[in-house]
Length: 538
Image: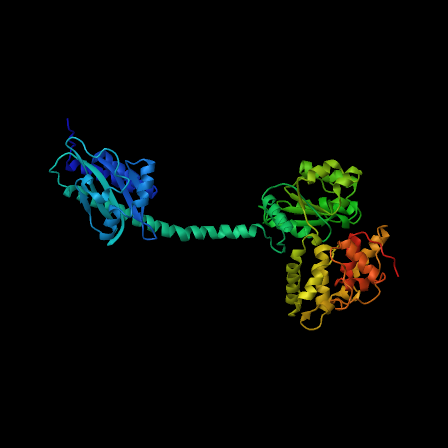
């Protein structure tokens, strides 16, 4: 018995209503198109359906389908622009094929599969263009089962054209929203990208090397918390600058940042400085005085050189950190404070704890988060940027326009810098001050004239500590390339063997040996220290 579907205007109105609800929902286009085609399947008894939209390339792309398997969908997507949808796109006119089995051009489309004919029925194809205004932006096509040989397709075409018009409006709105969303997304992304760039940069801190980028990342990670931070590193590596950066990146940025150098004060003065004192607490205490802990309330307290405080004061400091309260010198009233503590040291605290010079309980209390500051010799790639920074600041403060030559920069970049960034800053300022004209050349660097007092200081310290002696260069070295006829080391020698070769060629005169290797005397001296080469003084 043949099946006769109900065809009336009521079903078409219901289909339009259901489709309008779908178009009003905030869903992505492919899902929207698939649901629209499913409405046709339910109310109009369509067998298959496709909706294709014009891509930016001008080609049709299949975005929605119904009544197809995954394999059929993939094949239909490949040929959608070559079949009837492509013809409709080019002509801009609807197409009706009453019986697709009699349409030769339809056979190559993979959607033409399955049972197409049966008793008293046939499958028709109806396709219409999707427009926005006069522009064709896509094609919608359905395969409909028809039971009546006299069936007229005018109502079907009219219905599909109405739906196509609604789809066209939805596509236009989607494109407009997408166009608006792009600059909005870029606008939102811009500060995010800026934050990413700033994530590994700190104000007043120069460092593009991998070791400093690691420090910056740790600062940004730890700054928002309340954790106590211990800054480790040699003297002059910039621990105070990092401490200030942590404070200004934290929620306490609007509170005070108080610094105390523990090594600069005796135990008695340090106690009064940190905890304050009451009037009459000791001779000369004529007024009540707040300590640094009170002054730092709501902010950050930076204790520099924490490794230098005595064992007796370590116990007092530990109590404050545990109880978050203290008493002023000469007082008996507990004072509570809300202070974030940042400490710094250049000492080996682990060795100090093992030797009994530093309390282990205080060590664990302050060593919650450790940030290690690399010495300048381990981040030489930052030296040019640091030199430019210091030179720019000097020029601004002294109304000069000094620049530095590549040769002079090369010398600075290859020095040992035991005093780290602080020593480099002093060297740049000293060199800039004593330079005539507007150009700092290699000959203006103090070490090129044996006038580097810092080098002498470290040599004397090394000898006084019983470490390996270093020779004092008494000649005036000049940093220049060796003569063309000067002897050259054999290829393949190690750095140590090359140093020994140069000393042998120069009969132990370090200035001559340095010139043979195109090094400054200071560089040569540090190379000797590095390889533990002892040179007899002449």
